[in-house]
Amino acid sequence: MPTIIDGKKTSADIKQEIAREVAEIVGKGGKRPHLAAILVGHDGGSETYVAAKIRACEECGFKSSLIRYEVDVTEETLLGEIARLNADDDVDGFIVQLPLPRHINADNVIKAIDPSKDVDGFHPINVGHLMIGLPGLRPATPAGIMELLRRYNVPVKGGRAVVLGRSNIVGKPMAMMLMQKGDNADATVTVCHSGTKNIKEICREADLIVAALGVPGFLTADMVKDGAAVIDVGTTRVPDQSRKSGFRLCGDVDYENVAPKCGFITPVPGGVGPMTIVSLMQNTLKAAKNRQQA
Ligand code: GUN
Image 1 (cartoon, protein in one colour):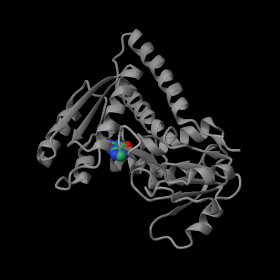
Image 2 (cartoon, rainbow, N blue to C red):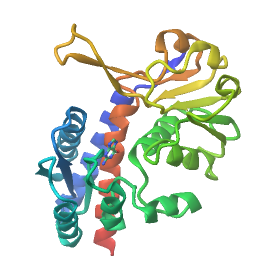
Image 3 (cartoon, protein in one colour):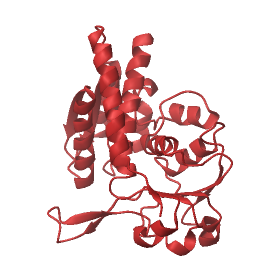
């Protein structure tokens, strides 16, 4: 049977580690890290994620600010708020929750964020630093996955990794991190996407599969080599009237049939999801420390 990678427990451990470090900083008269989040509109998923990020700030001993705009906010107003947060010395890092309404150009918004406060790691400067292996703020979801792989001693070095999905938030940065030089990386990486032929055959070669397509149950048992490690990034909301919320979260992996073949697997929920939030906390602490040293 596989080792179930428990993201919930790991994230709780890391939040405690962060809280201890923050208590030490504040105890020595240092500044409490401060994360701000901009939320546009009332999308259910975004509301849930932002609320979880604010809750995690409390658990880590951070200060947090939630800045809300209605769905018809102009790009100009949003860019004005970003300029204000860039200039605010008390704010160590901030995020603009995505997706944004269609009338707002998300690229313009991301490029307006000061890279040193870009705790999502989405600014082209931070993306470029990741690509060439320079220090910087890394996107939270793939950073959280790397942390899980390290803490569970999942063998990555020299192995074959397949990333399913080529998004800027997960697939592309995940591939970069796995191929990076280093003890916990050094994988040979293939990125598959909606245009890939022979996806089954490619997956069957993999020692590690990261599924981030957003297609519930996409990865089936016939696509997985015996003993492979499978990381499920999918969080599609599927209607389920038996739940109070009216939906359940569905991963990209057919867990029931894939798990018995795996060496390691992450569940949904309780796998990658909680790690994404904790990586954001790690980035905020890092940004705060960098600012104090600057
Ligand atoms: N939407 C989905 N994932 C993310 C994320 O990691 N950061 C932000 N800002 N928005 C998201």
